[in-house]
Image 1 (spheres, rainbow over the protein chains, first blue to last red):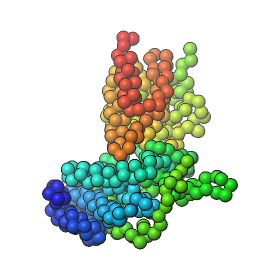
Image 2: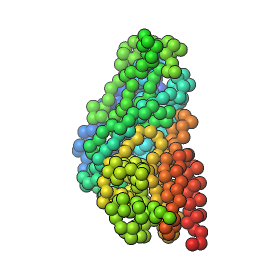
Image 3: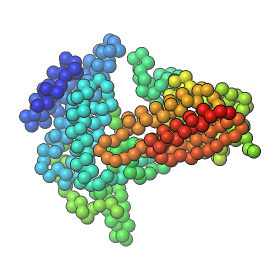
Image 4: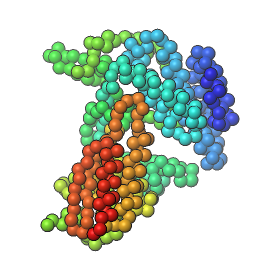
Length: 253
Length: 161
């Protein structure tokens, strides 16, 4: 049972995780998603009221974890459909959610390791299932040229300051903001930095003159570990299971 | 014989003497073959230089020397390090090599994808300087191969002058 694997996540978060696991165990993913969305909103309020760095860090960890739980419950809800792998939208959503969940569970050190590993493995298995069905895939990868990279701590070019990206300084974490960017190229690669920018077989169509055209492919997807302040949403099953594709005739050559 | 480090120093607008005591120069890609206002720092090399400096390695970048190259960010999983100019006679060379290898391994581990057999590759031009002699290795390979090359660089650095 999932509940036994949950520990050391703190009192408030622990209670929510326990409730989430109970709902998931009983196949009530909708309820599991609802409690995580509400909890994320509560975490946002708590974050605003936080008085110490420790409090802020604890809430940040909770937000990352709660977003991962919502992603996992959304995956559970989608894959409940026996033929989900035949539906392009469902596959795309499961792919993105699996990567989101795995990144959240493995990138943030405040989450209990055994718990994170178990659920990250679940996300990895789903990614492998999709890779087995559609092959390793091709991905979009852009190159951008920037005039500089601005440090969020001191506002100077990061090449000339002493702050280290990703490190905390007081209550702020050092982050880089690109200055004056312009795209240089878009490449199609097998090994992308962001696997969410995958080119799916159904993005291809054949023109009358025989040329293959690939359209509606993602070049860049925004992703934040701590998610959005509104807590995210539940997947729209009606939208996901609208169209089926016959994959054999749609593969990218 | 061409004095390559002298040429680079002159291109960056600094006297060669200013590079004394430096263990590694982290430079933009193609810095010796293109106009200085055309070259770009690789995004990964900016982060590597920060790490080297934090570890106390005597490291300089083109930016430190007064040039402000643009930054090129490639959204692939590979690591692009531009040009690393290593001074073999500097006593900090072993620590420099270790720091570079650790950083590259950490980056590989952070981005490793368990779900697929996708290997992070390193792209870098290594220049090794001893007195006025420069050797070049253009490297495009795996993290493990890169570590082996760097181990050899460390050994060469330890040879008697």
